[in-house]
Length: 77
Image 1 (cartoon, rainbow, N blue to C red):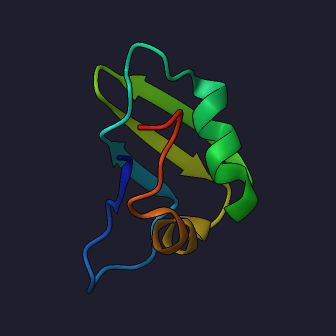
Image 2: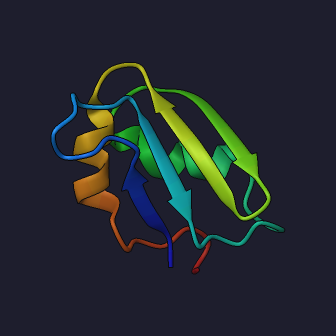
Image 3: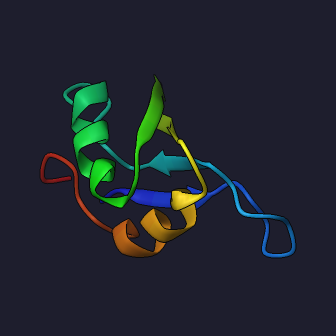
């Protein structure tokens, strides 16, 4: 199960970057993550590192995508 976690703390300004975990690091590709998050805003960059990833948006859509995709699945995981 994918968990998206905003890098900003509640008292800080909105962020453009999401930190995601709990996806299949072997089979998940950058394009899979881009496709998952593009409905919530323009994705500028995805960086996958081992079993976590960063998704950078053009604007502060990250907060909205966090609310919409929390506990969602990518590639049935």
